Length: 512
Ligand SMILES: [Zn+2]
Image (cartoon, rainbow, N blue to C red; front, side):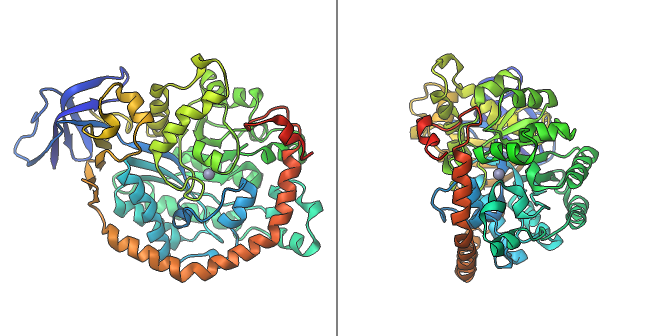
């Protein structure tokens, strides 16, 4: 069916950054076919056309959540702020108790998808981890939720294949024998098992929904996988042209880990030396990187996924935004997971990306502009997904992934500067319509694809039923957390030749 949005303002995000005051957008199937003042019914022919009145509204490309982990969608708000290494004890324990049924995984995935769609996110890169390990049934459940919700999604399996003890520094010397033996256990699934899961994901889902659903690969982080599995993932990524998700130097402890376990090299250099840095990579966080790391990343063509809210929630630090931009490194934005950015709201991420870097350099000429932030949010996301030229613009030939915002709302009244008000005012409350691949998935605050109220009720029911399992996770974490605290503080006090935290360096030094 053809859809015409009439008399609408348009932020095209095209190569000339065109903003149209009053235009018509014609959509045919999943594609935008015309954006112009006179395109109202061009080519409509005999087919039915739904006309949407766009007066007083802004059409713009849908937002891209370029880094996300759906498996904790149901745990938003459940933890105090903790550093990553301690936080992960609660977030991804390798316990059977944390495993869910396929239906629970479906409902959990849907919670995040609906929240994103209602806030104007049309595409998400889900770096999903599965505890204790993935299965074809759970992969199907997650992808079916994305299929049913209507969102554009890319799924990777974020699954380590080395024992916990090998991923972290100092622990081997700190733990009592029983806990040390526990953490030295092999990972729940070996690389052959994981690659079989990827074969299922690729076979069943890659390109499904007319290309709306795609696969990606993930090694989680370089220290969490063996070099042979890492290389196998790279080969898959190359063969199918898939994004490759890799967390690198999110925390100071990971910088210290390079000194301890990788012959003094940074994790970026370690991956470079393996010959695995590539333009397909989405390097997630990249906070504790130095100039040599930035040069290697720039040369590889990899993108950086910046998650400023998660980075504050977990006390990770501030990514060197301007130095990466100066080096020509493409940046996209993400929420990270729902217990590290409990809102799953890309408007809030964009606002913080526009603000946090102002306190890292007194030269205000180097602070991010609203235009740059929108470029990261939309164009950067499209590029990271390897969907550049397909999504990220309201322009003929692009997928009809767009949102309509009501400009007759307080965040846009009066309208002084569209881009600044998009980045700094409001938090998605003005979104009136979300369209993905030509399908209207949210209209006037209501999801059109699924019964949201029924899903919310089911999610509450699962939360009640699994409350006991969470206590088991909490008990296991409590046994380990004193040792993780000791490890964390030992790394915090190390001089690594840089500081990515705010505050007084002397405060850090006291942990030496
Ligand atoms: Zn992440």
